Amino acid sequence: MKRKIDLGNRAEQLLGDDTLMTAFNELEMQYTNNWKTSKVDESAKREQVYMSLRVLDDLKTKLQVFIDDGKIAKKQLQKMNT
Image (tube, rainbow, N blue to C red; front, side):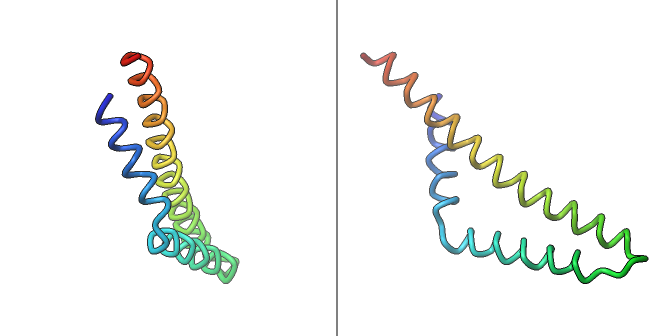
Protein backbone atom coordinates (compact mmCIF):
# COMPACT_ATOMS: atom_id res chain seq x y z
CA MET A 1 0.00 0.00 0.00
CA LYS A 2 2.85 2.38 0.85
CA ARG A 3 4.44 1.68 -2.55
CA LYS A 4 1.22 2.63 -4.35
CA ILE A 5 1.03 5.86 -2.39
CA ASP A 6 4.68 6.66 -3.17
CA LEU A 7 4.22 5.86 -6.88
CA GLY A 8 1.11 8.01 -6.97
CA ASN A 9 2.85 10.95 -5.35
CA ARG A 10 5.81 10.71 -7.71
CA ALA A 11 3.60 10.34 -10.77
CA GLU A 12 1.63 13.41 -9.71
CA GLN A 13 4.88 15.37 -9.42
CA LEU A 14 5.93 14.20 -12.88
CA LEU A 15 2.65 15.13 -14.55
CA GLY A 16 2.86 18.51 -12.84
CA ASP A 17 6.40 19.10 -14.06
CA ASP A 18 6.48 21.77 -16.80
CA THR A 19 9.63 20.37 -18.38
CA LEU A 20 8.20 16.88 -18.77
CA MET A 21 4.86 18.14 -20.04
CA THR A 22 6.62 20.43 -22.52
CA ALA A 23 8.62 17.46 -23.77
CA PHE A 24 5.43 15.38 -24.16
CA ASN A 25 3.68 18.21 -26.02
CA GLU A 26 6.63 18.91 -28.32
CA LEU A 27 7.01 15.24 -29.17
CA GLU A 28 3.31 14.96 -29.88
CA MET A 29 3.48 17.99 -32.21
CA GLN A 30 6.58 16.58 -33.91
CA TYR A 31 4.97 13.18 -34.46
CA THR A 32 1.75 14.74 -35.71
CA ASN A 33 3.70 16.93 -38.11
CA ASN A 34 5.62 13.88 -39.36
CA TRP A 35 2.32 12.12 -40.00
CA LYS A 36 0.81 15.12 -41.81
CA THR A 37 3.85 15.62 -44.02
CA SER A 38 4.28 11.95 -44.92
CA LYS A 39 3.91 11.03 -48.57
CA VAL A 40 1.24 8.68 -49.86
CA ASP A 41 3.71 5.80 -50.23
CA GLU A 42 5.19 6.22 -46.72
CA SER A 43 2.82 3.93 -44.86
CA ALA A 44 5.65 2.47 -42.76
CA LYS A 45 6.56 5.99 -41.61
CA ARG A 46 2.94 6.69 -40.63
CA GLU A 47 2.74 3.40 -38.73
CA GLN A 48 5.89 4.30 -36.80
CA VAL A 49 4.48 7.74 -35.99
CA TYR A 50 1.23 6.14 -34.84
CA MET A 51 3.14 3.80 -32.53
CA SER A 52 5.16 6.70 -31.14
CA LEU A 53 1.97 8.62 -30.38
CA ARG A 54 0.47 5.54 -28.71
CA VAL A 55 3.54 5.13 -26.48
CA LEU A 56 3.29 8.76 -25.35
CA ASP A 57 -0.40 8.29 -24.60
CA ASP A 58 0.21 4.99 -22.82
CA LEU A 59 2.86 6.58 -20.63
CA LYS A 60 0.57 9.45 -19.63
CA THR A 61 -2.22 6.97 -18.93
CA LYS A 62 0.04 4.78 -16.78
CA LEU A 63 1.15 7.78 -14.73
CA GLN A 64 -2.49 8.73 -14.20
CA VAL A 65 -3.25 5.16 -13.07
CA PHE A 66 -0.43 5.44 -10.52
CA ILE A 67 -1.96 8.69 -9.25
CA ASP A 68 -5.43 7.20 -8.98
CA ASP A 69 -4.18 4.01 -7.30
CA GLY A 70 -2.17 6.11 -4.84
CA LYS A 71 -5.23 8.15 -3.90
CA ILE A 72 -7.26 4.99 -3.34
CA ALA A 73 -4.48 3.50 -1.22
CA LYS A 74 -4.31 6.70 0.88
CA LYS A 75 -8.03 6.54 1.55
CA GLN A 76 -7.82 2.86 2.48
CA LEU A 77 -4.92 3.55 4.83
CA GLN A 78 -6.82 6.42 6.46
CA LYS A 79 -9.85 4.16 7.01
CA MET A 80 -7.63 1.50 8.57
CA ASN A 81 -6.12 4.06 10.95
CA THR A 82 -9.43 5.46 12.17
